[in-house]
Image (tube, rainbow, N blue to C red; front, side, top):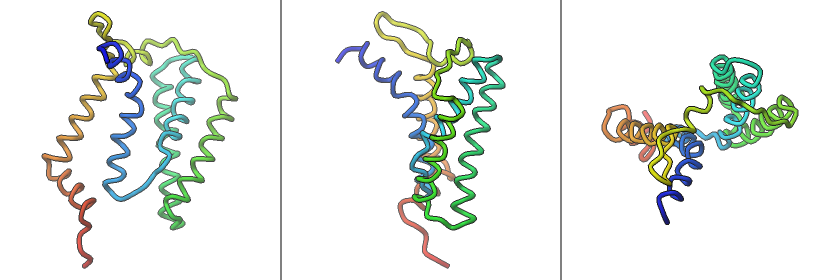
Length: 168
């Protein structure tokens, strides 16, 4: 239990913690998307493969678009075909995992872009390293906490998730 171990745990928790923020919003609107991390994997594979071949900024945009398209297809299947969200998301999980593997041909992509590695760097205080990604995660957590607890938007979302409003 020392500072170096705590900073390592924080750095390793950034991706899952950031996904948890989005998942919190999904749960609050009474939706379910059980495998959001698979959508993230698809976006990461697309971004990494394109960034290894050229500029990182368009690669990040393409990865973001891939994530939006995959999530939108999942939402469309749930809304249009009225499939249970759990079943639709489980099926989408399998499709996305296969698509990511086919796209990457099960290869890893060495990325040397400064733009993509900036969140993994940051100041060091002796053995304790604080990355910009960790600081961004903390800032996003605080901003979401404030939005959910102190704004009308958050209070309405939180109230409806706890006590659904009566019909009519």
